[in-house]
Structures are given as C-alpha cells and as structure tokens.
Image 1 (tube, rainbow, N blue to C red):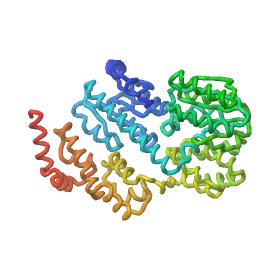
Image 2: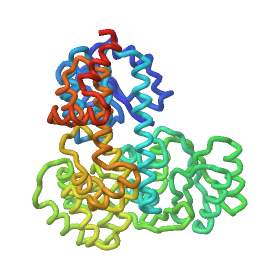
Image 3: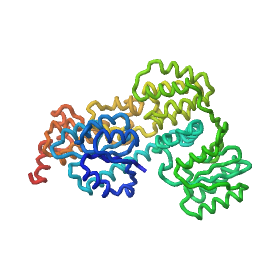
Image 4: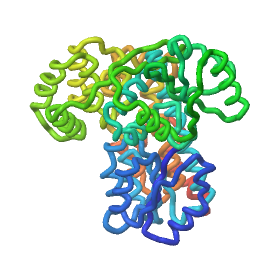
Length: 486
C-alpha cells in the first residue's frame, strides 16, 4: 500500500481532504497530516511517503522550500502542489525540482482524485517495470534480495521494521497485507519444500516470502485467501510426512519477527528459491566497535558527507573477513543507499572479496553499475518524462549517466524501437507539456512557459513549437484564451 502525507496550514482544508479522499479505495494509507512545512518535513523523513499533497503557501517552511529540502533525498516521492491564482512562479519553480502535478485552489474533489489516480497508476507502472526489469536481469534477483534481508534481520533483529519499509517497493508483498505462516516439522526439508511448493503452485496460492528451514523446522509463508486452500495445504503437509506445529496470521513484519524469535541464536539457515532448491547460509553475529564505526561512516558518505579515508578503512575491514561475513557487513553499510535495489542485484554476481570491495567503492563514488539494463529505451522514455524541464538533458548525458551505454548505439536503438529520433521525442514531450501549461496558466508569458519545459532560449522554443504544432506559442495561447471566453 502506498503512503501519503497531507500538508496545508488551513485546518478546514486539511479536514475536508482527509474526509472526502477515499484513501483506502485508492490503495493509499494516509500516514500523517501537517499544518506547516516544518511539520511536514519531519513527517516525510519519518514516514518516507510515496505521495505528498502540499499547499505552496505555509508558515515556517513553504511548499517550495519543503520540495527543495526533500529533492534528491527521496527520489521516489511524488508531490502534488496546491497553489492560489497568481502563484505561477512558485509552481514553476517547484516543477524545476521534478514536480509534475499541481492544482489551483480551491481544489475540486473530482480534479484531485483524477490526479491522485494518475500518480498512483504511474507509480505502480514504474514499480512493475522496475521489478520486471530486475527480474529479467537475473532470475535469482528476488531470491537474493530475500536472502540478504534474512541475513540482516537474523544478525540484527532491530532492523526488521526499517528493512521491510526500505525494500517494500521491490518485494512481492505489501507491508500492510495479512499473510499466513505455517511452521512444519519434517525429517528432510530439502525434499519436503519442493513438494509443498508444487502443491501451492497447483492451488494458485502465492508464496510471497521464500521458505526457510532451520534444522528440521520449515517456515512456510503463504497468501491464503480461502479456508479451503489452507485445508488443502494442511492435508498435503500430512501426506508428505510433515507435522504442522503452528499457524500464525499477520503482516510481513509480524511474520518475520515471529520467525526471528523462534529461531533464537542460530548459525546455519537454509532458504529456498521458487523451484525449491536449497541454499545454506551462515548467520554471522554483529561484530565489534570497528565494524559499527565503519557502518556509520559509510552511511554518512552515502548521504553526502565527505570522508576521503572511508574506502581505505572499509577495504581493510572487508578483506579481513570471510566472504559471507564481509557480504553481511556490506549489506548493513549500504542499507541506506538510494540505489538499494541495485545493491542486491549487484551482490548476486559477487564471488570474491575483490568484487565486493569494488562494489563498495562504486557506491561511494556514485557510479553504481547498471550496464545490464535490459530495457534502455523504456528507461530513457521514463527519464525524459520526469526530467524534460532540465535544459541540459541530452542523449549523450543520458547514455553516460542513466543507461550506461554507447551514445551512438543508444541513438540507433531508440530510433528503431520508437520510430523517431531521440531529439524529436524530447521536443514532442516538451511541446506537449507546454500546451498543458498554456491551458492552465494562459496568462503566463511565452518565456515563462519555455523555461518551464526546458528551453532557456524563448526564440528557439518559438521555432520548435511552430514546427511541431503548426502555430506559434502566441497563436496557441490566443486560442486557449478564446476557449476560456477571455
């Protein structure tokens, strides 16, 4: 479930939107409301929401200041801004920070719901695309993600809440859904698990968390919506020599917490992939002060604080451990990275300490490898949709910093898949956005509109707009004004 925060200094507006927005029906959880920008910022830092609805004018910290402060820290948070008539310059400035959704106050319920539905659909599509792309980049990605999560929570149970929230958008479960945990005693887990997974597949029962075994105890988490399915699973367990010792219902956090409590201090745990293949991993206890210090220092570097000596010290500590132990430490070091999903994808290909050290260094230098991106053209399209207002955007820059491939090759690939050149696609996107702005802010100048959509030269914007629409910006705005009866 996506999380939202509402910020407006007018209590009557906050109460009205709290009441008439059907949060649950939209698949949203209202994580908090704020009466000023400072309160909103504290909520955002705490809750890490997907959507923030904010007034542009607020005490202590206005909406624009809030957006600037959040920008770059939570790259997946989408803002919907509410602005009064005549505040176009604020909305224009906000859109330089990636804000695409805005409304004039007073907001109509139908209009806001339409925007929310669009934002939610866009977020779910991105989530689906990200998971699909990562899955295609390696069949074991999802398995490796949960394996790493398992090691983290077993070595540090206090991390359960944060790791579930952090990885929620990449997991096949919703952090608020209710799942069923079955604890089964068996003689041969590696024989039993593939068999029971086959039964679950036949019944079309989802297995959102990989099965895990400790000794002869198997923990099987299922999304069981009907009692008949639960009865069928119980029967299958009995038929295969298993003894069902416990059934627990709860959220993913409650399920994982229960497993950790029951497991106690263990040294070996097995996790199974979708085919039921077993992988045994060592659970390593958290080490001493030196490890804790390097974790904190590394996380500070990821958040933007300089520490030139970090990698010398980190490399020395990582090389002093066995690979499993070094890997577990690095997971904790990089847990706060905004490239969290890339962390697990890349860890899946690490086979030596040298490779692990190289990966750790790449994170501190902000050059996380993405060369295996299977959908570069889709990535380019999404990047343009989110960054068209940046006047510096170019095929060369995107090639080198977003999809990490040769610009000439990307150019040919883009034209082949899209049927048009990169430049035409970028210009078309900008012109379409300009037309949307003109329809809403039809009293603005051509120069203001041009700057908003990424053209620093109004004369060039004039030329491009006429080429792609057959009329000048002024003619188009006159047409809009006439349609508004002005």
